Length: 627
Image (cartoon, rainbow, N blue to C red; front, side, top):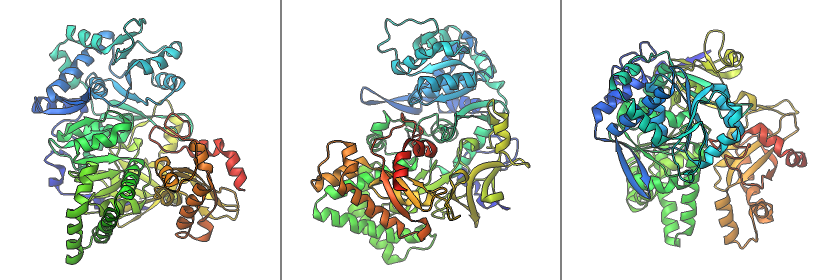
C-alpha cells in the first residue's frame, strides 16, 4: 500500500501567526493554547473585542457586528437554553439559511457542552422528523414561518423536542403553540439567568473528546447518516484549514454554502476563530454573485457548480460585448493560459510570456476580476465534487488562483489540498499535515489522522464498515498517489462494468462534459450494457441565449430541450469530449433531462450533487430508449 502524508509538512510561518502546540497529528492538539472550540471562541472574542466579527445585510445595508456582540449573543442563548433544561451532551438542531443567528446558536451549544446539528432548509417535514428523532434533538431553532410549517406538520412525530425557537416572528404575531417561542424571548430568558461565572465554568468543562457536532450526510444513497465529530476532530480540521485558506486577521470572506455542510462549517464558522477573519453572510443563494462583488473577499471557497456558473456568466458577457471587446477578451485569455501552462506546472515563466500576460492583465483581466468581485482574491478553493482541469486552468488564466482540495464530512472538512507552491492539476493535492493517505485494496483511498470522525450516530454496523481492520478510514473513493499528490479517479460504487467486461469510472467523462458552458450536469450510464450513454442537464441560461440568438422557437424549458437545434448543439459538445477518450469510453447516445432540478428535488442533494441512483430510476424510460 502506498502511504503519503509527510510530504505535506509546511513551514511554521505558513500558520499565519497561529500557534499550534503539537506536532501535526499528535495529541494533545492545541490552537493558541486552547483544546476546545468553546475555549478558543471565548479567547478570540475577548482578544478582538470591538473589531468586526461578521456582517449581514438589513434592508439592503451591510451591518457590522463585533466580537463582543458575538460572545454576548452566544452567552445569552446558552444561558437561556440552560434555564430551559439543556443538559451537556444533548443535541441542538438548527434549521435556517446562513445568518448570524446560525453562528450564535452553534457557538452557544459548544459553550454549554451540547451538540450542534444543522438541518438543510430544503429538507421536507418528514426528513426533519427523521433527523430530529435520529439525533434525539431537544431544542430546535427555526428561521421563519416557512420552516415552522414543517415542524407543525410533524409535531407529534418528534417526542424528544422540548422547545422550538423561531428567529423571525414575521407573520406569526397571533400564533401560539406550547412548544414554540421566539429568539427575542430566549434572549430575555438568558438575561434573567445570566451568570458569567457559570457560563465560563460550562466552557471549561468541555473536553477534547466530547462530541461537538453532527453532520448528516447528504444522502446520495439511502437515509442520511449522522457523522459524529468531536471537539478534537474539529480542531484538527481547523488546523488543516490554516494550510489551505488565504485568510488572516481582518480578511474578508463570504459565507453562502449551507452551514449544515462541513466545508462551509469549517471555513466560515470555525476557521475565523483561529485567524480572526471577518465573515459576510450572503443575502441568499440567488444573490451570491452580487454579494461577491460587494464584499470582494480575500478568499473564496465554493463547490464546482458555483465556479462553473461564474465561468458561464463570463462567457455570456463576452458574447454580448462588441467585436473589439470579444477579440480583446479572447486574446487576454490566451495570454493568461500561456502563462498558466508554466505556473501550474511549477516552472519559471519566460520573460516574454510573463510580460505579454501583464499587458493583457492591465488592459482586460484586471477589470474582469474587479467586475467579478475577485480583484482581492488571493486564493480560491474548490471541493466536494470533481472539477474540470480545464476550468482550473481558465481561472488561473484570468488571474484567479483556484486550487482543488478533497475532504469529507468524515474528515472534518479538509484532508488534501493543492497549494500555489505544491500543485498538480488534476489531483486533489497532498495530504495536509496531520493526515496520512494510503491506497488500499481495489485502489481505495484510505485516510488516518486526528480529524477522522468517531463514527455514525446509532449505526455501529455502518461505522464498522467505514473503517479498515487496522483503523484507517475507507473513503469509498478510488485513486492513486504520485509524488505525494492524490488523484481521485472515481467512486467505488459508481464503477461501470460494461457487458464486455470493461471497467470504466464515469467521473472524468462527466467532468469533461460539464466543462461545456452548455452542459450543467451529466450522468454516464452503461453498467452491464454494451456501450455508454448519458443523461444530460443543459445550462438553462446559456442554452436559452444560444437559442434566442439563432431564433430557435421554444416556449418553456421542456420545449427548449426538445428543439432539434439544441439537440444538435449538445451532440457537438458530446462529440468533442468523445475525441478525448478511448472508443470503449465514448458516449454513443444521450438524452436531455427536460425538467429543471433544484435542491428541493430528490434527484439533487442540498449541495447540488446528483443522486445517481435516483436519477437513473426516475429517468429509466429515457435510458431504456437509448438501448
